[in-house]
Length: 236
Image 1: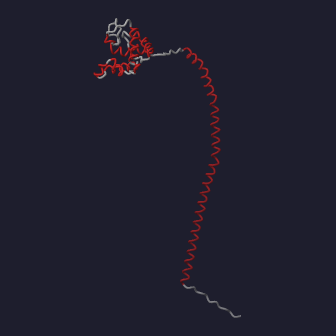
Image 2 (image 1 turned 180 degrees about the vertical axis):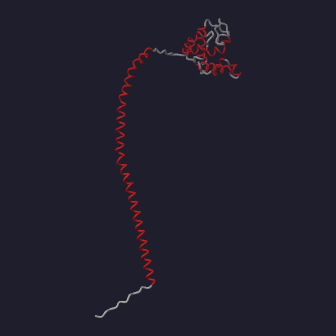
């Protein structure tokens, strides 16, 4: 047999350098791959722990809520006897309160107008006739304050005129004489109804134009004073 000789092939220097570079790149890629895999494994383990904690929280929360509800129910059940006892004590005390209330007799004032007029005329000759003034005012359908207010304006409610005249309202400039205070009050009420109210003269300003016309030229002080007396009676 004939021996065959294979001579060794020598690669060019450039190719050898390239092979070395490829090996270095492969090594770097391998190292990078290992690092990425390690990072993925770390993240996976970290996420698994978080998921485990969240799952544990969701699993324990309903149990804790149930235990809390049972605890509150037991507390309410333990307080019920105290509430029942307190309610029973209040029920026992109620008859005594009712007995006290039954002994109180309320006093109701159906009409306060006589008391108002009496306070307004306190110390004046017309004061004892306050109730009769209200009676006459209702009889003729006029404001109950009108008769005492005019009397206060014209004669200080009878204090500035002769008691024999009983003319506290200045009728005929004080020339009219009445037989009694009752007669005077009734006549004044009737006159105010027929000559004033029935004709639509109801306010002090309207009444003044006929009752005391000179006052129109002096600023209407008569009506202002009547309104002032109205306000005084409204505060009594």
